[in-house]
Length: 222
Image (cartoon, rainbow, N blue to C red; front, side, top):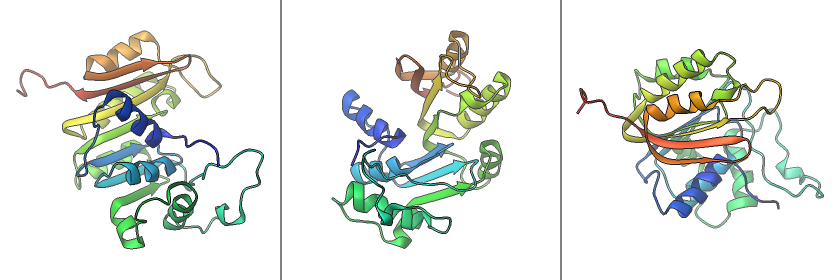
């Protein structure tokens, strides 16, 4: 088996590095553009949270169990069109976790919710009527996929409105040219995001910038 990748694993590693909790056992987590959510199964079994909602434009969310490149994928890891999210979780648990109590199906459905084929803004506008605030929101590898920066910032503002009191937002964007369909953030764009947050962590590598913070409270709100 190869190394575990994904935002959930990155979050766990960063909490260890910073010696800081980004969520608690009571936290409601929202992952916008969740893609492959398998690392959040790993995160849950390593540091419990209350509930996770993953939304993605793709009509079919698939969990990739990490395997080595020189090994064929075991037959029982193959994800077919009718493999349920719980069955995907079971496969991931068997091959990756397998060291704590596995969730049964009702518990899994209470803990994890997946909204497939769902646009972020549509979900957030509807969700405001049902569950207006989240404790931790992941906006990772999404904003730089929006061609119009104004639309990107509008989504950022909408997401901030769904962040609870003392809630934390995790943002990762490309800051360098990568490939067609990626619209990197420049320093001015980054500064606009930073201006809206009380920064907890800000780090860059050769291609991306990770910003973690809390929503700033205006003087009128105090």
